[in-house]
Length: 409
Image 1 (cartoon, rainbow, N blue to C red):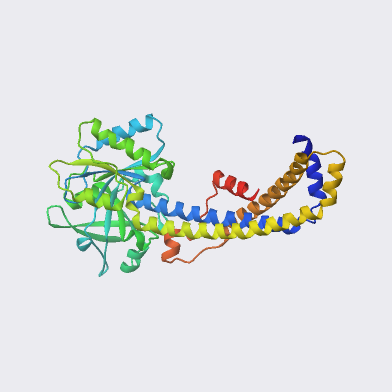
Image 2: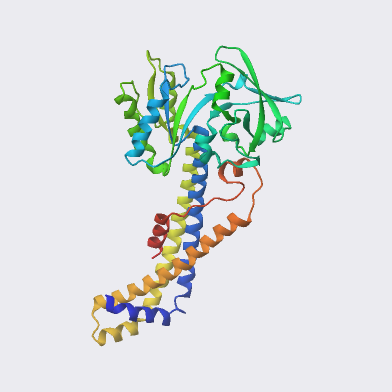
C-alpha cells in the first residue's frame, strides 16, 4: 500500500480537472458541516454558561425538609467534601455559597417614583464567584469589589423599568423570614443583559440579602460547583458529591436528574433536613427541550445533505472510474494485481477527500470567525438567550473536526 502513495498522488494531480465537481461538492459539505455543527455546539455552550451562573453551578447541593425552601445547616462540611473531590482529581473552576430569595410578589425595587418587581434575589460572595460572574454581559458598570456589601447587579429590563443608571441608589424591599417588610438602600454597580428565560434576577452580597431576610449572616441556601468540563463531569461529580453527607452521617436523597424529581424532593415532608445534589440538566427542563429541538433539526439537515451529496459523489466517482477503464486495463496488463489497482483508486479518493475537507473546514472556520467578529446582532429575546454579547458563539472541538474529516473522507 505504501508503495502506491506516490503514484496515487500523481494520478490525483493529473486527474484534478476530472475531479473538480467532486472537489467542489466535498468542499461545500465540509463547510456546511463545520458551520452547522459549530454553531449548534456554540449555542448550547452559551446557554449552559448563562444557566450555570443563574443556578449556582453545574451541580448544586441542596437541603430540604419539605417546605420547598433549601438550606444548608453545615456548609463547611460540604465545602470540605468538595475539597476532597478536588484532591481526588475532580476539576472545579469555582465553588459558590449562595443565599436565595424567590418570593416575587413581595420583592420590589424603587427609584425616583418608579418600581419594578423581581422574581429572584441571589446573594453571592463577589470574591468567591468573581471568575464566573465576569462572564456577565455587562452593558454598563462592573462587578462589585470583594468587600462591597452595598453594591447590586441588576438586569437591563429592571434598569429600563426604573430609569436607573450605574452609580445611582435604589431601594430594595422584601418580606423577611419573620414576615416583616424590610428595606435596604443599595448602589447599582453594574447592569447586565438579561433574557426572560432566566427571569428578573438581581445579584447582591450574601450578607446583605441575609440581613434583609433577617437570617443569620452566614446562612447558605445552596452550594454549587462550577466544573471545568460541565457536560462530561456533571453526572459523575453529582454522584460522588451525594456520598459526602452520607459519610458524615447525614440523611441524603438520590441525585436529582429531572425537573419532576427536583420538585418532588423539595416538597416531600421529612422529619429532618435531608441533603442531595441536583444537576444542571434537571434545572434546565424547558431549555433542554429547546436545545434538543435545535439539535434534531440540525441533525436532520446534516443527514439530508449528506445523503444528497453521497449519491451525487458516488455517481460522479463511478463515471470517473468508467472513463479510466483503459487505464485500469493497461495497469492490469503490466502486472498490477487487482487489489493494488483498487488500492490505487482508494488512495486517490483519500487525497480527494482530504483536499475537500481541508479547504471546506478552513472556509467554515473563517466564515464563523468572520460572523462572530464583524456581525453584531441587535438585542432581542433570541439573541440575548443564545448569543454572547450580541455575537454568534461557535465551538469547534477536536472530536467534531475529526468527525467531519471521517465523514467526508
